[in-house]
Image (cartoon, rainbow, N blue to C red; front, side, top):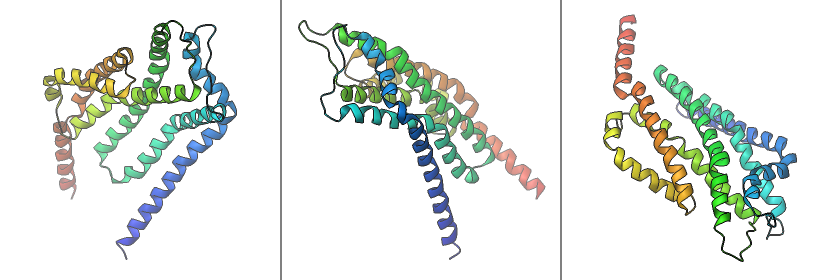
Length: 254
């Protein structure tokens, strides 16, 4: 019974954290849903600016004018609530972490959130104008470019997630080196393979065009180099030395 009680208490705490995280997303959604159409118009601006003057976006599905902005606002609400969601994750796992782990997790949570936002901003302000300008310029003669709003939404959400996740590479590199899976020196030696892998990932995560693939792969490589620099301060050896010093201090105190 004594062993079941902590398990039940942990499950109840986990449920509370999940409800708070979901509640934060719903709260943001309620605050933003009134401007759902304006939000969609803002997200569609890069495409509309690239379309010819005689073209416009269309809705081929009867319910698309309602559900497309609704879905976009819901996803945006999750993006906005990510810091609070990650805080709930942190508050749940923090009691079971060592002191040096806590010092690592907090910067990683903050940096991962910032990098995710930077990835989305990079996709919207840098990639979208280039990609949409290219797509509309290569349309065959006699073909009128009129993009469906649901198809456009699926396209930009895919790119948002692709660039948001790709910008997490420095965090992944630091975690791998900190966990002892690899070292910065080993990753440097494997740099040619990582370059090829970056373009393969760009091919898999983006639409089948060389422009968006390259514009994803190049930032990934730059972020990888940044992750190598940060990983030097979070190597497994440094953490082991700190743990030994901490254990020796505890033994001396006892």
